[in-house]
Image (tube, rainbow, N blue to C red; front, top):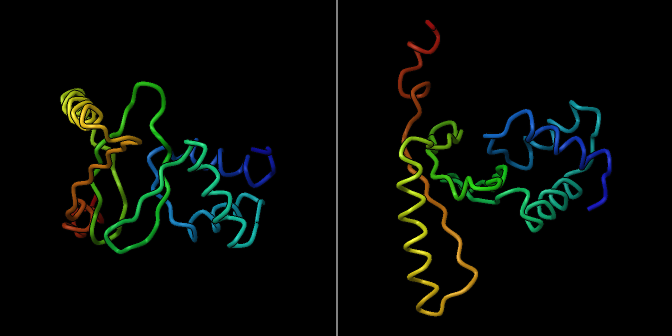
Length: 141
């Protein structure tokens, strides 16, 4: 990938917010705020190229909005996440991650043994985050 101003701004955006799950519109707005304003088509192409290169993970949330997260790095593996059905923020679930990763590896090995290829796992728990479930408590804090 070429290191354009938009590409560098996108890398900086996810470096600053590694757990962010951003829609195209949110990325477009953030790039504009960083002084690397590009049109919607260019943002979609940039996000798709980064996803194809394994730098970002592309997923569709409960509201059918495509969101892009930083792809797992190194030994992180596919981290399960919690997605708020109200605000659509996503949070990586790190507690018990080693057990989840072991279970996922067993499942992927069983599928590969059956002849399946290009396997990927995406685990999301849906509900309402603490701020959406208890907005008064969040404002008081």
